[in-house]
Picture (tube, rainbow, N blue to C red):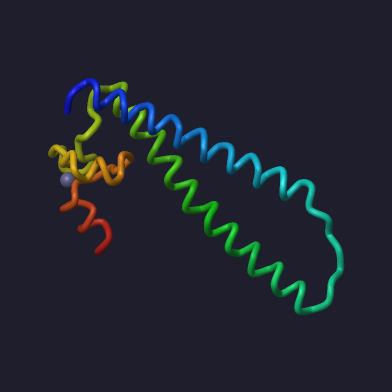
Length: 114
Ligand SMILES: [Zn+2]
């Protein structure tokens, strides 16, 4: 992987990090400013399912944010594109699809199985 491409990925990761942090901040503001009102039952049920969706999304975002942070550390340490499990090179094609991928396809497959 050449330096120019690595710089491009780094920029992309930083942007992604900012995007996720902004999203987290906006969500935080939403929670703080949320008015607790007593609606009818249907309304309350709908609000609850919206909230569950939000928390699921937030959890997925958190995982991505961690992976993005780790990818940035790996760039600094010059070990970006190395699988965290077997130490093999992660194919560039895979990193183009998921720049914050931690594992090669083989190890990812193993992790998902267990
Ligand atoms: Zn691997």
